[in-house]
Amino acid sequence: MLGGGVLGLSTAVELLRGGTEVLLLTEGKVGSGASGRSLAWLNAGGAYSDPYFRLRMAGIDRYRTLLAQHPGADWLAFNGGLYWDDDPFAVIERHNRQTREGYEARMLARDAAASAVPGIDPGVLPHRVLVNPGEGWVALPQLLRLLAEEFTVRGGTLVEDAGLCSLLTGPDGRAAGVRTAAGEEFGAGTVVVACGAGTPAVLAEAGVELPDASDPAVLLISEPLEHGLQAVLNTPRISVRPHPGGRLAMDHTWYLDLVQRREDGSWDVPADVLQEAAAEASRLLAGNPEVRVQSWHAGLKPVPGDGDPVLGELRALPGCWAVFTHSGATLGLIAGELVADEILSGRRHPLLEPFRPERFSFGWES
Image 1 (cartoon, rainbow, N blue to C red):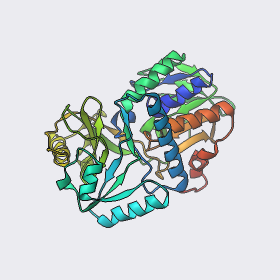
Image 2: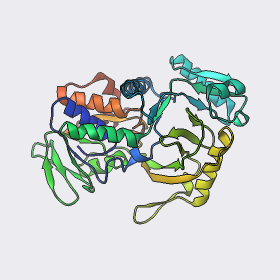
Image 3: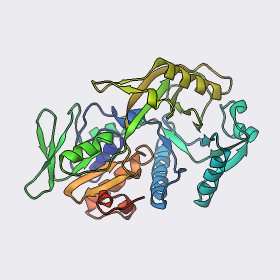
Image 4: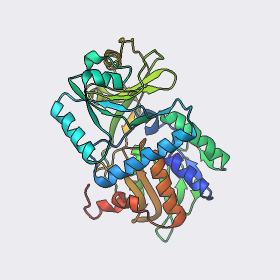
């Protein structure tokens, strides 16, 4: 297996639960890629196709099961989400679409919303906002530690800092293993590529072209503070959620044009961006506590070319499964479960049919 994020680790753990041997290689450390810079908002409230909506709902269900197994966790919660937009008609349309799908959605007046979402300053709210009581969040680094512990206990083999790996193919055209950046080769009857935004490049080297729309993302983590926030806030200028240790996790898109990638591959985020984002978060919170950014995590956000997940065995490279999606947090557990089930059983799972890689070869669009 290639990839030490939530998708790779969850797939690996599910395979181990099924009784197979697993070797997991990751370019750097576990969680050092997209999983370490995801806001990890657990939701199915966007304008998704019906199959994608159902898959996301199944993903949320698995997190609810996980929370029932770890009721004291400070890294996973379902305390709802609050959303508003500068265009009130966009909020109304979002509400109407969600209610048609059976997704719990409430249009609330300002005062009612402030009561339903503790920790927010009522003065910042527009006249009406959208509240989704069933939404949640997960801190993926903490989840990855849990999965990595089970991976080790169940006898999985982990190779970190393997560098940019490549696929090996056999004379029959099937995937036959992987090669590390240092040239070390590992044979395998099945290979799973879950390398986040690096997935298309790995597959391209093996002759498989996967449309890629990955773009930058920057997650900001605050210093500890008394904030009282429990829900996820999605607002015109900042998205905010609680984070373990009394911190906040924040991100948005307005500052991405100001983020630069250096020649050595590292990233630069201007100090005034950090200050402005922190100030906006402070403005939203009850009592307006001072928010200071303690750390930031920048990199490419995995996004397939048509926006929908890519999940399944490659017709052009039998024995190789691709796991490539923007919604790595929401789908983190369910995608690993379903991909592992296909590998172990040899049967294609119907929930994955709309998301198979071959759709690009046959003009399938979401």
